[in-house]
Length: 220
Ligand code: DX5
Ligand code: ZN
Image 1 (cartoon, rainbow, N blue to C red):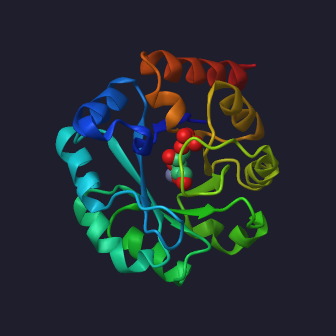
Image 2: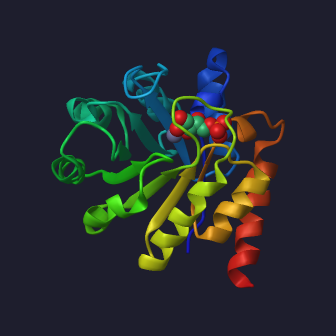
């Protein structure tokens, strides 16, 4: 099973965004996670399509994973696709018809994903499992970086892994080396980390450490 680490740009130094994107890319991480917040679905505002376009411009080969924390993501799919999103992640709790929007994302040639908040039961994903490329299990309440990992969300990861061996299962929120180990043990294979990675003076070392743990675990 492939293991992917995704630095979340939300935790970058916004005064040096282009350099921070390049720093994340040269850490060996597989993709950049871009958190779009609309101050309605979540209580915070972050950035929009221009930052996705910036990432595409400064690091064209660094995969762009776009997490839409928006009440009406359906109104912005084309905008983010044009800006350079390669995977678009929609919240199950958003106010749109998910079957339709998941299909539209694929029709644009992109990968799709559903995100579930900590309080959302995992069973709600079951009707969509054959229509999605990945699931994102939130391990904090979305809206801010730097929060504490909610370990109670882990049985959702195990439930999904038991159900579908080859599903890409991502976790997002409060990931550091210790919580990464926990998430990997429960069956996650894609880990988003914001504050933990961007605060490192050597981001590559932190990424390598997580990947090495995952490899050892899978070979054991
Ligand atoms: C939270 C965002 C996360 C956030 C993670 O709403 O979806 O991607 O950037 O930040 P850390 O890793 O600092 O918890
Ligand atoms: Zn996110």
